[in-house]
Structures are given as structure tokens and as C-alpha cells.
Length: 424
Image (tube, rainbow, N blue to C red; front, side):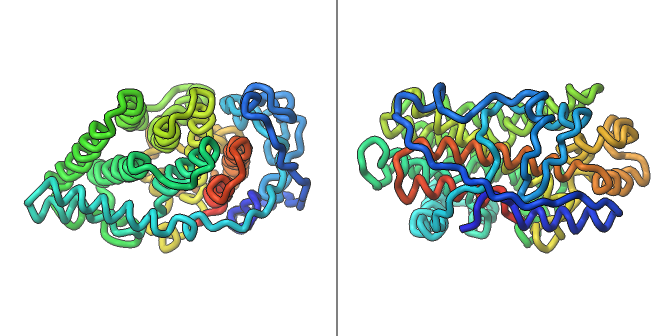
């Protein structure tokens, strides 16, 4: 299993940058991170060799980014790259090779998740169209990162507390709920964005009319809400209900922008948490709570999911600039076409302030999308986005290392590697 080094993305970024006449300096590093055994009661607050990010220490640091020299070491760039990241992190470097494939490890669990989701939707409707639309994306062809991580965490926590590798039915339900909430948001996104293509096939709003698709998304959420109620756990209900609130607020935030650069990046990260990371963070927290864990262990799970979710979206925003449509299963440069300024664009503003008026007019003038795409590739925006994603993945791996060793705990570490190295 590859270490957290994102060599494939690094190579793709280098290739794209060279196309635009920019040649970043790449330098291989292979420092080891020692896997420490911490006592459970010193998990978060007193972990050695961790530190808070600050502008000064990051600006002075030549950290390897996927084997690359950190592109944010210049003070004028470092401020944007680091001032909004609140995580604590180890020195960057390679993680141990665990030789665990989470998808193989959870093959039966993930099959069950999709079978049970389709059954739950079928039980709640007798209308053929509604069933077909609502199950259109539950075909097992997605990345399944949310149910995978939820089940990995559930089994890892069960082993950590009870030395049991089994999965509680309620924990499996949370994995299903997480995928249903995510898929409902995709269905609604496709209507809002008038998408044509997703996961290598026509998007759901192309196959059916918008009114039916919108109601199908509502239906998926309604069934997920019924499943949450049947968990009969008030605390877990509150945690999972927060996810839907965050999703809606994140969508509203995406419709707006901020005047100043610093406000924009803070706005972007908050929106990213609400739209993407909240679901992963609160799902893994929920399965931990269902295991009877205390608040400290629940917070470790939450912070793992938060960092993984932020990294996932940062990589997604990066791939929108460096992957082909066939690899992504959806059009590239889609965010620019939708008028959205993601991390690569916001970082690129450091070198090319002419991007600022384009951001404010949401890339609506002729040539804005093409010009912004070009300027991002001429800047260090891709490298800076990659660096920030790597830091969040390493923090997620550090948190997973605090759990008792098991195949599922190792799977959580490998999941962070997968998020960073994925190419679609």
C-alpha cells in the first residue's frame, strides 16, 4: 500500500504545470514517522511531536509535498496556505506500509449497505418511477468513501473498547444513512447545477424531469430520517441531523463570495466543512457513540472524519484542474463554469490578483473560465492545495494511530492515503 505521498497526483500536477511553462522543483524525501503507542488518557491534548500551525513555522519549513519541496515556504504565499488551518500535525513524511485494502476488507459490508439501502427505499414506495430515480446512484459504482470510513471506524472502535471486530446493526444503519444523505445531495446538486454527466453515465436529471428528480432527492432524505429515528438514540439523532443542516447552509454559502482574500478562504473552508466534511465527521462520531464510547474517543473519531473530509474536498478541487473528464466521470473545470472559486483559484490570487474581479463576477464574462484555468496552472495554486490536503490526511492518520491496532484501524490510515492519492 502506498504511503501518504500522493505521488500520482504530484506527477499529474507536474505534468500540467509544465504544459503552462512552469517548472516546480521536485525533491524526494523519505523521513520516517515512528508509530507511537499512546495511553488512551493522553490521546489528544498531550501527544508528543505535534504542534499548532502558525504562519512563521510553516513559512520556515521546507516540507515535502508528495515528494515535492513545499511551495508555500515564501512568506507572502504561506499566509494564505496556512492561516486558516487549525489542525495540529506531525512532521510530514512517509507513513508505514500497512498492506491493508479497505475495500477488500469490507467487501461484504459494502455490498450489504447498497442492498439494504435499495430495500429500504423499496419498502417505502410503490411507485416505480420514484424507486428507479431514487436508486439510480445506488448502483455500487461510486467511491463509497462515506460508508467505508463509517464501517472502518465502527469496527476499529469496537475492537478498541471491547476487542470485538463485529459490527452493530445500528452502526451499519449509520453507514447507510451517510450514503443516503450524500446521494440525496448529489441528486439535488444535479438539478441545481443542471449537470449532464456523473460517475461515467448521464446524470439523474438528464434521465428524468427536474420535478421528479427533486422529489426523489427529498424521498431519499425522508427515508434516511426515518432510519435515524429508529436508532432510538437522541444524541446520535442530534449529531446526524446536524449534517443535513450543514449541507443546506453549505449550499447557501456556495452561492455567495467575499470581497477580501482572507475572508474568501475562510468562507471557502467553512463551506467545505459544511458541504463535505460534516457528513464524514459526524457519521464516524455517531458510530463511535453507538459503541458506548466516551466523549474523548468520540471527539477523536469526529476530528479524524473532519480532517479526512476536508482533504477529500481539497483533492476533489485539485482534480478538477488536472484530471480528464474520462477519469473523473464528470466534466472537468466544472467549478469554474459554475462560477465557483475553489482552493486552487484562491491560492492563485496571490500571484495573479487579476483573478479577484473574475471571482466577484463568478467567471461570467467571455473568456473568464479559460483565463482563470490558465492562471491557476501558471501559479502555485495546485501545489498549495495539494500541500494543505496532505496535512489534513496526515492529521487523520495520526488520530487513527491513537486507536488499538487492528485491521480496521490500519484501514483508517490507508483510507487517508486513498483520499490523497485518488485520481477520480
